[in-house]
Image 1 (spheres, one colour):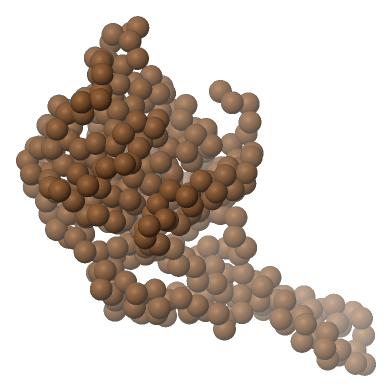
Image 2: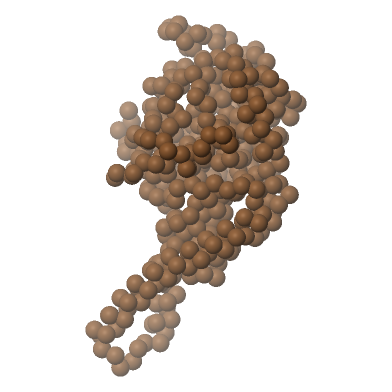
Length: 85
Length: 288
């Protein structure tokens, strides 16, 4: 496991994301061409989206895996979690 | 349609081989637009996005190494913020690009099947549900509206005006107390103003949108913007009304000190892709 704490180097990652996000799909300005904030993305990808059980990760629908270490970073992934931190 | 390029789509269990599993980005209707949407896209491990069909529907998928996408592999990816971001952006890039071609139902992050045939089975099993959702989302986009209360921003202009006209004659102690009171009032006022703006936003947006989902307000390290996020909503808006929606909500609170409205989007309708029969995650009774 990477020794870096969750979130360290995050600003750099965002910057890198900004740079790489802009050359990808520039043909239409709307959906794909703009860099979005990671937190807005995670709101949607971790609590939105159609939930299929899938074959491999039974608990992913509940985002059990994700919240273990990222609680402090991504508050919004768990909905009914009483936020113990 | 099986991808011809998936050489050795190994079974899970052939431990020595670099087995591949099937990552699902989104589901749409079978047809040329969906095939076209897949063209040229690549997934998180740079393998080509392709389509798997069943029951008149098609899934946008790509092959990924089983080792990275089994439970352990996913855990490692999702717990590491940089890897999570990379996966999230990759997923989003495919969904967003596809949505420019045709209406698709975005899957939640990290939906993985053992192979294409399992994806086909899934499409067949849930075809009526997907049909209904696709019909609902057809021709719609998602917009995000976030409202922030920022007492410090509200205080800044107030302090300026205060220093413009110094309260001559009053004692330093009284000045201090007045300043403190003003701070408290500013704080309270900013939150009240944010509440009032939220009502305006809701009224305006409800008139233009088809549906609404409230996300939990953003907090924590990733919520880096100034102020406190007091509302974090997603609206489903028809494409024809999308520009009206944007125009109506842009700069809505520019003249309100201490309140900021942030518009994000348009998004593929992630927040509205959960089946209507099951409870929205935001309102669900899921226990951790």
